[in-house]
Length: 489
Ligand code: NAD
Image 1 (cartoon, rainbow, N blue to C red):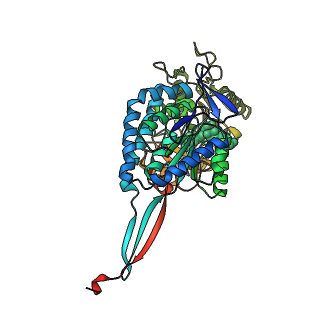
Image 2: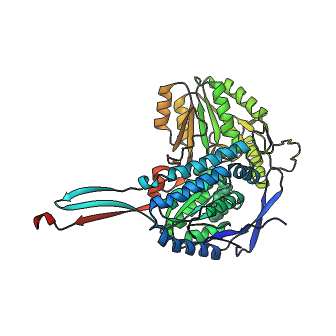
Image 3: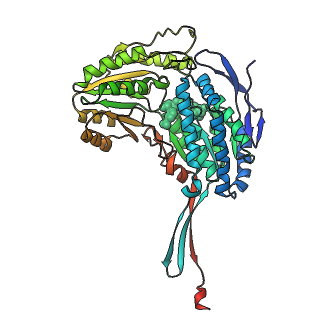
């Protein structure tokens, strides 16, 4: 019987009032790792009430004291780094190296949030009129919550949580029900920091908990990361209920390869971008556009890289790509490849029948390359979220940028070139919020905002960087006049 996971509310582990449970499955071995409760609205209500009560004291705790808990958390995350990375691989499927990279980025966000005493300072003007001063103060907003996706179980809650609590808010984490184990372990570490009860709470579950978050009057701000249809839904319902919302959605990331690119380097980087994390990154390269003479050399090189990628269980040495998250995902990806061929594409490298010895039941799809896809077809527009790279050939950089800009999404766009002028033109004209120049995964460091555009983001303030501090604080302006004592004495 698999372990049944608990929620963490008001400083205590407790059973959920759940009617349903889901198996948490290792996608490589199909072993059942745990059973996750699909908590009810009543569980969320208790967490929101605990967080609202804790807020009254937490907001009065000086920022310099608040960050002491983050320093402790950073040390604990470092100490348990290997275990957390292994847990990510077990529940999510990516390789151990990829899981370690993910946890590093999570920790980096804790480090940046430790600067909150200076980051959340306001500003002031003396004598806006004779003897009158004006000051701007940043204050926390109250209870905030994150609704997370499956593909980065360790990192994504950390795009928000450290900033939220450092700014004086209290918090609720709703992990993806597909990968709840990493946050379960993280929550144990958060508890060890001695944070006051109710400052951080964890509620497992799916749509019922999400809807309860969106409707609860005490919750003032919601951060969402996941697919575009759900991002749009969360944004609308949160806004209708008067909450702040920042909702990061899906992607279909194009990369352009110019004839003057270093093809060996480009291929190495793009193979990792398209097939790393089994293509389940919102910054995965999805369409490669070759321009002019880049077509032949790049096509041959990327086909070799796709064929030679070692696929297997992410905990084993030398494995470069793990499985996708579920059997349903695998079937959806296989259907998408078929759809591409129905639309006239040819399959240059076919990963639909993977042989992974020892893991025959696992949810594997090998790297796949579709050639000559129809730029106006469905496959050029649909997020596949698997290890599938589609190739398109165009004659000029202007045609390639036009193709980038006609896309529905705007999460990332990349250019590979040795021309500064081409790079500058691309940076200026490409309609995406994260741009890579000779970079395949243009993921912003914790001190820069994660800047999705178009249907990849709903909201105005992004996660991370200065925008995180703006999102988790409200500004208060004070205009002051005091009697001029100098006249009296
Ligand atoms: P998802 O949208 O299925 O789920 C995300 C979260 O929403 C989960 O916590 C889930 O429980 C909840 N949810 C799912 N359906 C819901 C519904 N109908 N109503 C209310 N809540 C619901 O996404 P996923 O499959 O877990 O993650 C993959 C997606 O996330 C991809 O589209 C990927 O591009 C995107 N993503 C985007 C970014 C980014 O920064 N833009 C980062 C990572 C992942």
